[in-house]
Length: 144
Image (tube, rainbow, N blue to C red; front, side, top):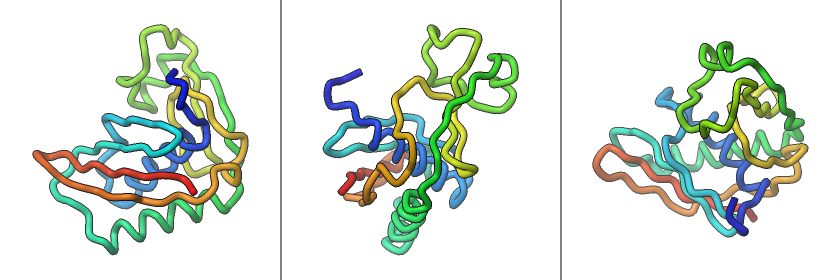
């Protein structure tokens, strides 16, 4: 992991991804660059987002952060995990017991990264910008 890796930012990414799934039903980001200062997530999409949509995403993410949800881990067999989750982004060394990170009852996702213990530790989520090009929607964000 890079020296600027941040569990707060990584946990915020999980919440952003679930918010995008719930709002647009297009899946989680297929690519992300997560750093302490600012981060970005790329989604397969067909347009840029409106200012109102960006405001709604930001509000929903901050609502989940403020809800003080516990962030927990669970290990499940790869066979079951493949039925319930997309494992494409996990490295081969993830093994046969797949670690699932749960954010309250809001999100569950396979992950090998570090996370906060509770969403209240994340701080305030702020979308910096978004743009769309060639079927890819990029959302840039930071924590305050």
